[in-house]
Image 1 (cartoon, helix red, strand yellow):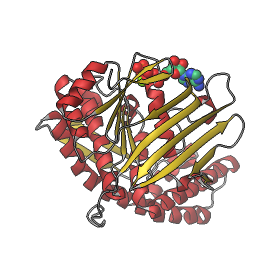
Image 2 (cartoon, rainbow, N blue to C red; image 1 turned 30 degrees about the horizontal axis):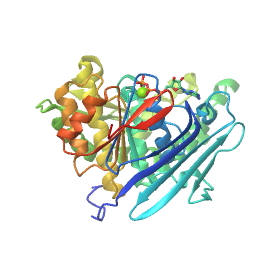
Image 3 (spheres, protein in one colour; image 1 turned 180 degrees about the vertical axis):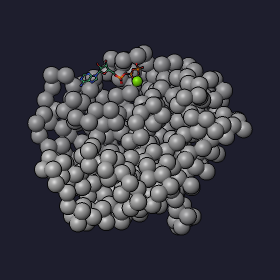
Length: 383
Ligand SMILES: Nc1ncnc2c1ncn2[C@@H]1O[C@H](COP(=O)(O)OP(=O)(O)OP(=O)(O)O)[C@@H](O)[C@H]1O
Ligand SMILES: [Mg+2]
């Protein structure tokens, strides 16, 4: 058991108190302070609501959720951007600084101290983003689904992450060898076997961990799906190894002739997938858009719960455009859920300020309401 093996430590309290931006996307300058619980960015399309979520995402992950190239987040025609945030965490205040200049290395500091490696920062301020691009998990290739589970497992299991890195390294070597064989019209089974042995050691370990994770994760996922949909529909997450029912070595051997022609390794944990089903049928092929959206929500809420249990901290939850395709009833259930004590700080975007305000008031929580217009933000909570 992954979760029960953890100490039942008390939850740490964590929230973002302040955020300030200079030249970040469409913001020339902005300074905001937040509620520890619910904060809502409202305004019309294209005004900069999602950009604010992205700035918060930067503080947790040292990068944009949307744009892998840092400099593309600099406001047009400017030379740099700065994002600063101050987090309250278990009674301490931590100041974070992220500065990007064109053609220079990104600077990321915590309490004025620059990190040697950004990987040291990731995980300290856990965050889950729920966004329309989550649909890639259903419609995208298998790499999206592997990445989804790998990123969660890596947060509690450093050995897993090391195995994954080692596996990818060995895989690249094996593929290079296959290419060399084909180009030089040669074959050397002894060298190939050396790489195979490594691939099998790491691959087998990764496979077992993924299956173990999915068993526990599925339970959280099912509970969340049932809550959101009030349904008795059955959902399933099934790991689909590309090795099928063969053991790893046999699968590699069986695929060898084909792999030599393709010049790459066609079976292994880098080709595995997760099958999403609703009532036993493929989610992608048969489910309605609202059902798919509910499924995605349940996946992300399960991710939230899992990380919360591992980190003993409720992650920040960013909800971008969640009402899209959800019916009123399901949307209300979501709002009630994230308003409860089991959740921490929440940031949500909506084009309708009255709707969101009402729903949170029904759920009995105070909301800090911001109006966003063309890169300016105003607190309208008391307007
Ligand atoms: N590097 C940049 N410099 C200046 N403006 C930018 C930059 N990157 C994006 N923008 C602008 O940010 C705006 C989009 O902001 P954002 O995605 O936050 O809108 P939104 O309020 O979430 O809208 P919607 O309701 O449609 O989701 C666009 O007008 C876009 O041109
Ligand atoms: Mg948006």
